[in-house]
Length: 80
Image (cartoon, rainbow, N blue to C red; front, side, top):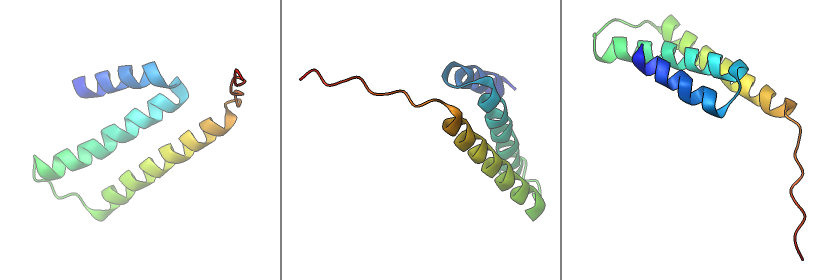
């Protein structure tokens, strides 16, 4: 929980909440799957791995849509 809290704080300092919440949630979900497999030696079935991949793909699409909605800021003119 502590790692999730600090990940959320760091993410909120960089991006908007609409992207930070799903991104940290997906990292938590994927991290729990890996931690369960590695540290607890749980049997993580294929459905859980596919779910983790789908969550990551969803966050990727959310990020792509958020990047499209941000207005393009023109670069400053060259002082020539």
